[in-house]
Image 1 (cartoon, helix red, strand yellow):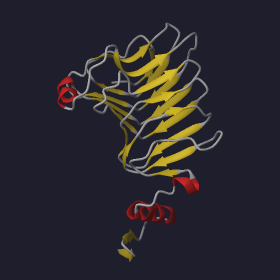
Image 2: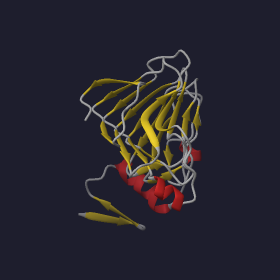
Image 3: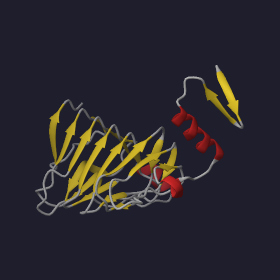
Length: 212
């Protein structure tokens, strides 16, 4: 059984927090400036506090950013898609949960870059690169040394974890490997991931187990 409040219809089994979130989404109000934890589609992901930032992304497309803070977390609440590159700077430690990283028409050589010294964990995330044909039709360029995740290492090891993530290539995108590193030390770990690209993970990756 449902109940109408204003223009929003609530289901009886919804929690109060779920009702508040749906009211915000239905009303189109951006409350990021008030609470700094719920970000609506069309916005850029951000870290408003000095550390311990937790942001919940609504369904929709988001712009990436350079992340610099410690202990940040971004949680997708539905079809939360980041369409421009994300760079995790050397000072940062970040967790992404249930978020899709999608290559837009700007055709970056990476979807995510992890700088030397940074720490990152990706849980249940999806990484999608577009085909060369799609990029040309959208007017994009195809850069060299394409990858899904670029590990910009300089003596740093154990930089990122990927748990239950999916890597998807929509026909040939020009990528040569999933993880690309600029030096021998950078290491990422994968566990329970799905590789649907036809590409290798790359030398930067160490398998913990369960990848298919």
